[in-house]
Length: 293
Ligand code: NAD
Image (cartoon, rainbow, N blue to C red):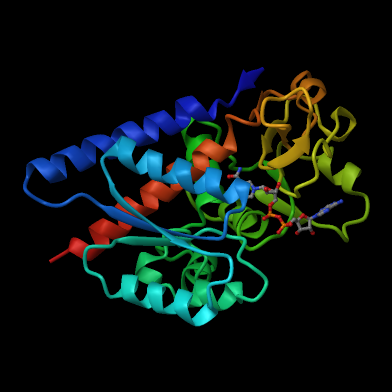
């Protein structure tokens, strides 16, 4: 059984980006620049954004963190995004989700210039993804594709089952796995909360992607012998014995499923790290698109 170690695969991506950045800077150009906006002080969001900024530093990117308090008005947030859209020194913009209830997430997503939308959430990029046109891919499914590529796990001709149909993970994942591309060409079944016989469908999966946000949902009796299992779930579960008072749990019962799988991602240390690799790769792409003469 192969552990799909996100540390190793993301390091490979980051080393390539660092080498590219170093050579850009050596040739007198500026480094790619990511702007991240965080609203309020949600603990998980703070952790994600801090990690994204730290990873920018590791590959030599410039980064700017913009903080707003929980009660910022939607208008002020949108104005800031427009300012960043018009700032030539900024290549990529991300707004950490979720946002407070008084702010409409879709409006925020649609205000980001699609050319700087390194999270790949803008309808223009989502539409291009569906049509197979070059676009910014949502960072998590992109990271998973980078992981399949790194570990040389082609999906071609296989049956991939994706659990979860969110716009940021499950649905784009199903599109990428079914796309006519080097690590695509799978036959994909997309399951969701209204799917009957989920267990029977999962048992047919050569590649099973769990992205539903229910800790430990996928058990060994749902997994075919030799399947590749990708666990996207990240849920904070209370644990008084843990230093922080919680533990991160995935959507898969790792210990029992690992005994049946041919390859499996750990949580933490799997898909989360690849999400950052996807984001950084998009930021480099945004930079390259923008500095083209
Ligand atoms: P979401 O809540 O937007 O979507 C969950 C999906 O799961 C829905 O489409 C729903 O239909 C489906 N679902 C829920 N219960 C189900 C059930 N019993 N049977 C079948 N389908 C069911 O969540 P999301 O934003 O896609 O995130 C999913 C998980 O992935 C969460 O744990 C989230 O924290 C995690 N996540 C991880 C990363 C990462 O980098 N590793 C990135 C994004 C999200």
